[in-house]
Length: 160
View 1 (cartoon, rainbow, N blue to C red):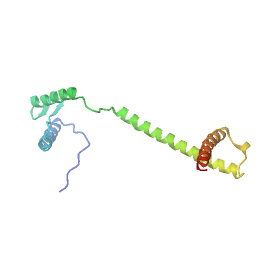
View 2: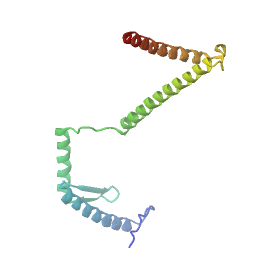
View 3: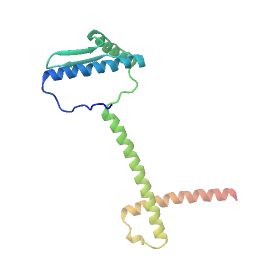
View 4: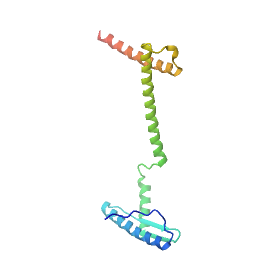
């Protein structure tokens, strides 16, 4: 047996709306009761309609309100460990992505400069053909290679 899908159209007839709400609320209460038993938690449900001033509550209005008050008191005393706004969460993801992109751009620039260096050494490209950005990148690469050469020179002197 297959389950029926939820209708996405709204009913305009108030009797049908009320009957649907009562039926769905009963099934929701059944699920809430199962959840409270299985997980040993306090569950309270409140649903209301402004149009008809109907209030549906489970297990009762008073008990549902007490559970909400208990929750609010618990939150104030224990202070949740980590509540984040959706905006803060998305900003942290964006910052991580920007950091990753910056690292990738640096790696790409390093590889480009090494390839450019090889082209200069093999005389495939002349120095006067280079752009300012390429010259600055090559200067950084030369500085890194020079420090590595000096380190190797020191190691060789120590071994001798």
